Length: 116
Length: 110
Image (tube, rainbow over the protein chains, first blue to last red):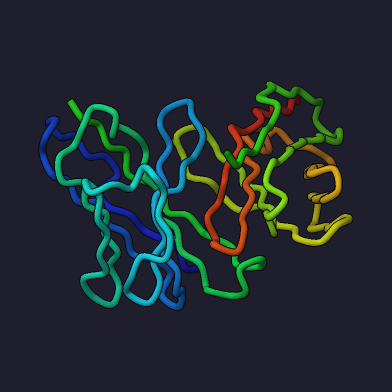
């Protein structure tokens, strides 16, 4: 069964450093998403991406964040200058792109980002 | 502020019993509702979704939606110890952005 994959599984970085989190969505899916979950808190939407552009972003997704689809398979999230409060589990998800009320999102295993 | 609320639990049921999980949402513009299961330290795993009022069954799982009351529930029949996890409710509008509850922790006791 096709799966969303993410690398690395765990990333440790120093405050102020740039990190890139990588995702390979399911191959026939058209929508891609990033979410994050701070330990003990709700899952939070960051951004959705369709047709090579951002379709929706949250207030969290400020100028420090960017997304890119550098080739036909990868989808990346870049954090330019990490802060302590960026420490969280980051989940990539993808969906086929059906009518919005039936379009289900499938999640990758996540990248645990630890900012020191 | 669009919110999804769940009782954090823990909800404890004996093996073989029915587990009932509930969720309310604030945004009347929400179109569809999703139940995910999350084991500790893992990613959300889709169980099922519902977008029409009434019941929807999938194996041992039944989702129920009442848009007038802004209420969604998930019933798990014949609960198994492997069902022990956190159950997340999420709502989506036409922008496909999932708004999540904090989740209900379920413990199924052998």
